[in-house]
Length: 112
Length: 115
Image 1 (tube, rainbow over the protein chains, first blue to last red):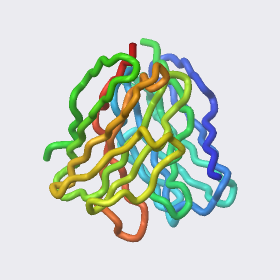
Image 2: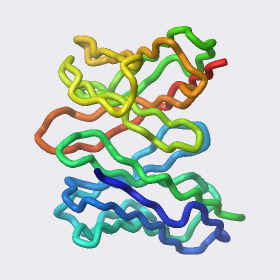
Image 3: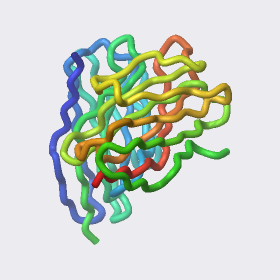
């Protein structure tokens, strides 16, 4: 059974700082890994999807990496802004099934 | 292009009642997924529909059920509501059974409160 872990559970940084969020998964036989953002009480916004054949994916100030063999992914946020404050979730499809297994998220606060 | 839409935004019910939640996928998407996000429990997979059929269900009791209509919209029904069913219910859609997992796009959710 796939299990996804995210560390740290919460992170508070001053504006402008670069930061890294971590995600690990137990079953390396994944098709892809997806990073989401969730604002309080809202739905999920897809940030990046990395296919299993890729090592990195970039979108603006965000860069996600994937190391399938070690079961890890990182989300790098450059020059953080208060608007980046949210909960960040990583998720992987569960084996041959299509549904996503989510980590418990990292709650990020960027202080002005 | 319109995203995934869900209705209602909020729903308040009492124990024992039934709740019906609705989801419209992105145009052209045939797969719809339902997830439950209860306080302190994280996001849990409920149901997956594609081309009108239930393809998979998570570890939830049978009183959680649903269906997908010919236009690919979907309905989630929760019977005999219990207090612990209070949660944010999220619907997601993806292009369909292309042979590999696709990006899932999420709606804003329905907040169900059971009193």
